[in-house]
Amino acid sequence: MSGPDLSVKIGAMAMNNPVMVASGIFGYGDEFRGLADYGELGALVLKTITREPRLGNPPACRTAETPAGIVNAIGLENVGLDAFLAEKLPAAMEYETNIVASIAGETPEEFADCARALDQTEVAAIELNISCPNVKKGGMAFGVDPEASAEVVAAVRAAAAKPIVAKLTPNVTDISSVAVACETAGADGVSLTNTFSAMVVDVERRCPLLAAGMGGLSGPAIRPAAVYRVYQVAQAVAIPVVGMGGIWNANDALEFILAGASAVAVGTVLYADPAAGNRVLAGIREYLDRHGLAKVSELVGSVSIPHTSG
Amino acid sequence: MPGSQGRKPGGGTDARRASAEVLGSERLPGDHQRLLLKAPQVARQAAPGQFVHIWCHPPDEIGRPPGSALLRRPYSISRLRPPDGVEILLRVRGIGGRILSQIPKGRLLDVIGPLGNGFRIRQSMRTAVIVAGGIGLAPVPFMIQALSSRLARVVLLAGAASDGKLPYRVEREPDKPASLPVLASLGAEVEFVSETVEGTLVSDLLEQRLDALDPDSDEVMAIGPRAMLKRLAAITEGRFSLQVSLEERMACGLGACRSCVVPAANGAGYKTVCRDGPVFYAHEVDWERLQP
Ligand SMILES: Cc1cc2nc3c(=O)[nH]c(=O)nc-3n(C[C@H](O)[C@H](O)[C@H](O)COP(=O)(O)OP(=O)(O)OC[C@H]3O[C@@H](n4cnc5c(N)ncnc54)[C@H](O)[C@@H]3O)c2cc1C
Ligand SMILES: Cc1cc2nc3c(=O)[nH]c(=O)nc-3n(C[C@H](O)[C@H](O)[C@H](O)COP(=O)(O)O)c2cc1C
Ligand code: FES
Image 1 (cartoon, rainbow over the protein chains, first blue to last red):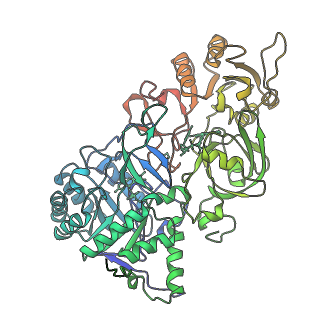
Image 2 (tube, each protein chain N blue to C red):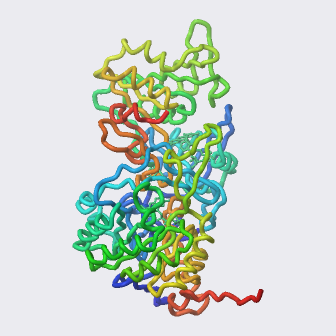
């Protein structure tokens, strides 16, 4: 069966198709094993790791459901670089597709240390989580500032030859300027968006529902806001853009692609439908067939905005 | 339905996810609803204390984002109805429970399970004392089913704020402790107390009986409100093996997202309720740091 050409490249990472799993959603990959054919997807991004293990935010509660979304404050709980390399990565590598490691740190050097170690592994690319809004001292400081973001990218670029994707936070005034700074500093791609900073109040107890106070909103609630940011960034950079934020079905994914994303990632939807990525992929294929398109790349950024006079 | 591998939504390869037919749905007192699902994959593998993670909307609409009840809902396996029936007993509290309680017979539900670790039955065990409070009674029928076939004796100490909060009929006869006949008939000696009638907490019941138990062969298994579990952990500490079932808000239900963590004993970080639990030995949990 020769279908349309779905392949995508981000730097040297070649993907069979543009559908990825977003970081943090399915841990290090093992827990969801068997609930869908994840090997069929273009790439799987694992939970963000840091050089040292992190306990994350206090429990009870860390995730709250909101209209068409969830607010999470996991706080980058992770096993740390050493345990990741020894235990988690080998299991994830059993998936027959690109495995992308996601890293964070409190200094550019911490990012670089992780990247240097990952450069010796089989991971297909390294995603830099400069945008996680949950950690007081962590990601936020880099991702909101173009210069600080560029510093992280440059430090990792110097430490690793693998393709680098910078993951952007939407919690900024001008996301394009951060994207451009990352591109200039040597990123092979940018991914967006991470979660939108958010708060849920328990009115009976008169305190925040999340133990951390605030968290990050994901899911369908953020989709239009994320699509617009992808559109803005795609206008500003030449490197591939990975679009995400509330994707639930192929139609949603195509919105991101038409707005300028070369690839897309599914996140929150996997908690409802662990096979959502496969469903999205099948739908994109069906769309290309229906519109007689030979390549998904023909669609990227092809949304046309009518000029209105005002 | 996306994918076409029989009844398996999304074409997944995992036997843990299936579309289960609702064979029956029954309103019970105290805002409870009992659902009978046809779920062979759950019935075959389930241990008491395990749960299922249910998508509240029609399986064939999973490709459309719902405005509410976006996450699956965790419910204990309440009882097995051989050969392939699985009962869920839910108390309607929020939107997810309301949707599930209104699903008519014959419809399908997208169910992942059985998930988590259930109650463990040691080789040397002779008597199990189940202590259950409130909605903690949901998995008790399955526990009695499984325990009474393997142990010499199963005792159920059950408590509720009032009789009306229970899904079961309370039997009160002079000079005898109150009982729950439905559960007694499954093979347990039942003693029930309500705070409004007897004015006793179920943890007090256990305390009164503790001296008569043998730490080598008897074990306490508890499920219910945190305050009750904390009290039981304090009463039994160093004397009896206690297993507790904990609840926490979940997203994945699979151990991946770290939403549902509870503090582990001895500063050993966090454990997930969904995968490491929901049943823990009391000594695995840091009760000081566990949120009320
Ligand atoms: C392992 C486990 C087993 C359970 N077994 C049963 C059972 O057999 N019968 C029963 O009636 N209930 C059980 N619960 C509680 C049940 O999951 C919640 O009542 C249900 O999720 C509430 O959803 P809702 O939409 O009706 O309420 P809402 O308040 O609208 O829910 C909002 C969000 O909070 C979550 N949430 C609210 N209360 C709880 C809670 N107590 N525990 C976990 N998440 C919660 C929901 O899942 C949802 O994500 C169990 C919980 C766990 C963790
Ligand atoms: C529970 C949870 C944990 C997450 N953890 C991470 C993480 O470790 N690193 C990261 O870069 N993004 C993390 N994210 C953000 C997602 O990767 C994604 O950017 C975001 O959820 C938006 O996509 P969605 O709406 O499809 O979920 C997390 C999101 C959720 C819901
Ligand atoms: S709910 Fe995701 S780890 Fe338990």
